[in-house]
Length: 460
Image (cartoon, helix red, strand yellow):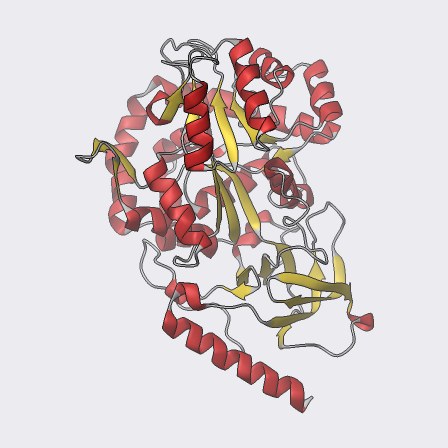
């Protein structure tokens, strides 16, 4: 064992040097998780006493401990602990941009706010996020920084600007397309300059709930844009909110839906179709539920997770200014009524074999954990919720071949927990270690809005 100890000490020294050099300097090594209970994200039940070995950025061994052979590299004791894949939020809108413009016409941005929000995801075990609509000067800058290793962030996938019909939902952060042939140059520019990982379109009903009347994209135009992006190798997601528009988006060729049906209960035939076609959809329950939750139970902002991930000033503003605003809005009460309906719609589709992917429509790690709580509240078993937050989110993105589960050859995005998440989904917050691309996250270096925290795992 002397060789293993020596190698572990050398790798520990390498981690210290990387920490001194900054975010981009960290490199992956070799790690062995021993005697851990594994929930691999595929939907399979928990596997006790497993060994998972990581080399570089990949998982190279997943086997019962009895068959694993001598451990390699840094040994991590998994006794009494559970290992799950890195969590994924498949629907965010990263904070950090403003409506005000710079002299050159670009939107003003707040890098500190954006990177604190990204850090909150890593702190909470989310190793990948999918931004589905943002100002490019905000999200594309952060995507470049993340991919270059210059910031501590989950892996970022982004659409950049979304695409919509003039006057439709999301118009403020959209490329506006009214005629496919006449506006094709705008689509080409979006593809060439923004290099979207996925395309977001909006196809929303007029005047639903307490919303003002908005323009709807013609279905044929929706089909043309989806087909054009698919021919460029780019998946699509479509913002919808009712069953009819969801069906139309599916038959226009949408690869995924950005939301569940929320305007009313889904029909049995729609449930059957979602199960048959396996169209992934983002769950996004938290965004609607959050209005009444803040008005009626603002004390949730005092939970430890929120204290870490939000500044005291932001939490106070939410408890006062924002809460007062929400209390006056008809939208708050409407969403309180409709959220249980959306929960049941999600449950039915999941129970039938449809593919739900965790998404929050928000911009923080605590919101993503709340989404998991709401899915369990809807009647979905915790094991299935973990699949929704890992493998299914990777399916949504079209990346399940490389991420989203603990399998040999996949990216080493892992979260080690000190308690069993199948007993209580909130145990996904009891994090011992977060690993992204084979590199343990040092929480002490995360630019969290609530201030510095101690590193949760250190090599013994």
